[in-house]
Structure formats: structure tokens, C-alpha cells
Length: 182
Image 1 (cartoon, one colour):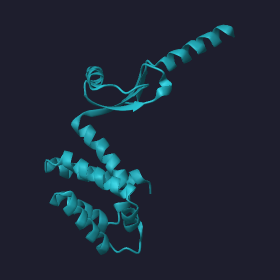
Image 2 (image 1 turned 180 degrees about the horizontal axis):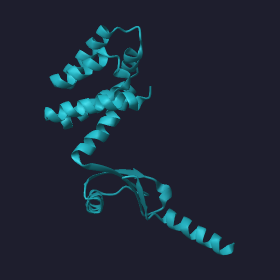
Image 3 (image 1 turned 120 degrees about the horizontal axis):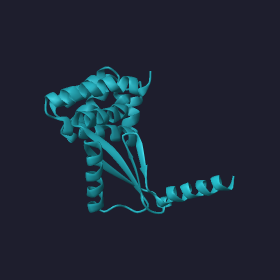
Image 4 (image 1 turned 90 degrees about the vertical axis):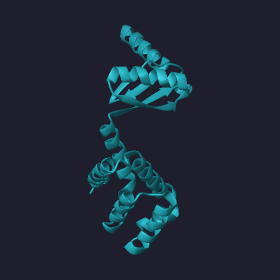
């Protein structure tokens, strides 16, 4: 069974509960934090992935996390249910699916802006506004710096790529010259 096959219904259930309880933003943060801990904390990952660790022992670990991370009763019960159903190993995939579903629910589209140098806050705000005008939706811009682009901007949004980089222009020029030589 694939990660997404298991993760999607659980992420949808958490989304429905979070929206009903008005906890969408905090639930996203808690789930992301739990996924990060499970991915980056070897002791925690092995405790949750080890079949010799009982469900009760895992619940004890989760209770400690719930106290330290200030989870709501609703989120705590959701995670306990994951534990009872032996689905904790799917938390990182659930977090990805939950972010996607929550963005969809809130009308947010994510864009990745690749540039040769980092954009400043004013440039990011201008880009966000331009993309919001283009898509008619709220846009969250994530930056990626790639010096090999030389200059310009490459934006990935909604399955589309807008590329005004110097590298793309040089590649286009090279293709044009090669076409003429043939």
C-alpha cells in the first residue's frame, strides 16, 4: 500500500476536524512538527517504527509529546488514534497531504521562485502580488537560490513554469543558432 493511499484519508479527516474546531493553522503546525520529529529524531523514529515497542509504550511517548508541544485534545486524540491503528509511520506523508488539502481549502497556491541571488522582501511582495493577479488566488512564494541561473527569475506555480532567466535565454539563443546551421 502506498504512502499516499494511506495518508490522504487521514489527512482529509484531520482537515475536516480542524476546520470544524477552528484549529486549521495550529493543526498544520503540530502535524508538521510531529512529522519533522519523526523524520529527524532517530530515537523517536526507531521507537515508532519498531514492532517490539507496544502500542501502550508508544502512547506514553505521544502523551509526553502532547504535553511538551501543547497539542489540543482534538489533535492529541487524532494522534492516539493513529497510534492505535498503527499508522504513525505515515505521519510525514500525512503532513504533506494535509498541507496540500489545507492550501486547497484556504484557496492558497504555492509558487517556487528560483533566482541566482535571494530576493529581498519588497521583491517577494511584488512577485506575490503579480502572481495573485495572474492566478486570482492567494499565493505563497517560496524562494530557491540557484547561482547557475546567472540572472532573471524562474517561477513554478500550478504546474506551470515561467522562465525569464539568462540561462534560459542563452539556451534559446543556442537552439536558434543550431537550427540556422542545419
